[in-house]
Image (cartoon, rainbow, N blue to C red; front, top):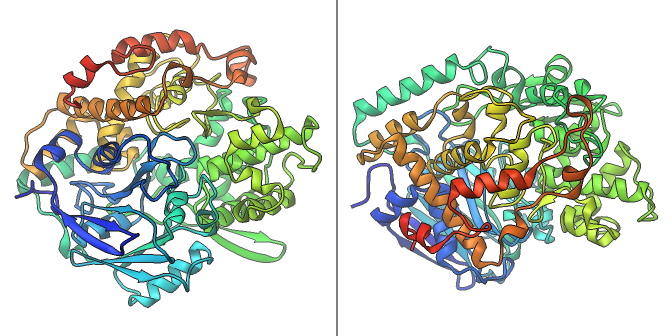
Length: 600
């Protein structure tokens, strides 16, 4: 019998054979890797490191977790886990909305896809059963039309649709999964893996009658209430506190720009002169129309906007910080309407806005330097829109962009044009203005990522304590704690934004009450450490080591501007600290550490 909180059901879908089998959840697996990210990474690891990401042998996991779809705050997420076609590393990518909750209510801890269908298919999940259905009528269609057609086909009520767009079908290496609220599992090319398998969508029909019941209802209620109290009291997450709830993630635009950590024009500088025009404050004042939210979330960080495009109204969600930066300041573009249009197109094609914005900025700098003949002016909206269509379709200059920023830079003749780590382009934090984030990019197991260990919580917001963003000393141990904590929350599949208000102690209380297995705050961090080391071990088996824990030369040699004027990132010093804290040797997990954590 499975632990409380688990449906005890993982569907294994052989797309080549058109067959579905079901397995329970091993209790030892649940205790060691929890669910979501951790359990998905374990399944990918067990599938073997040498697999080609776009071969039928690669697996694609869609995983829930023990708290998903419950009354726990921010518990509506789902993780897609696979081997990345963009980086060659293990990758997990998460989305919010209601899809994760519905998959759990439908009776699943996860879906695992392997093989390749002979024709386009989607899966329909209801009451613990999975059916493969023909997707020929939606193949080639955008995400928005696909979601509409499949929702209507299944009754329109209590239905969630997760789908890929034409980018995934056409082999764009940073293609993603989208759901009906335009939430994205954005990074690492999980949608590209789906496209290689002729898998178009996952449709789930379920209600909260399938909600998991906690082992200790009274303790769970108390833990949920404490969590809600802390979230509401936080200046970052609390409703009407002026943070995420009021301005969304884009509340960071002006803040990060002011400290000289906003990568601008492909990180040539670290502050953008038009940041205030595309900030959360400007969005709220001029174009905000709604604040949609996810399952069991009191924060409502998503910001739906309406903009005017040459006399036509475009309504879209969501005007996120990362997307606004990637398609805005990163490309020298300060026009809100153009950015909204580009986000909408990326969502419909199913493309990661962060990676694509970096692809555009690589092309812009390449054109500026005369490395390519085609003009791609900084901030030119018309050109950016045209290249969006071309990249998704693999046409013209877009066929180079479709491989990601690093492959594009190599095609243009200088790979140092790409601001990346391990082949994944950076998000909206410059390592010259936020030293901990530079270390975070370099040591992230999925490539340049702010979500593996969010040190700006400390460096900018003072959570759990304030550290100097321009100081490197102490960032190694600090980052390790953040990475381990986030690995655990990603495995419960609770939104990372909860960590602005709660921590390991609250996570332990929630998980203990749900599963009936008593754990402490120390156990939370230990479990996160196990998951992080398992990911690193998988990458080590794929040839990744110290040489890949690197940053582009620009961050190490070219000083920042604005408030970070004269600053570069002291990566080697931080890496020495970090490896010592991790117990790694030159970026490799020693066998003694693997045994200590129970990985081997």
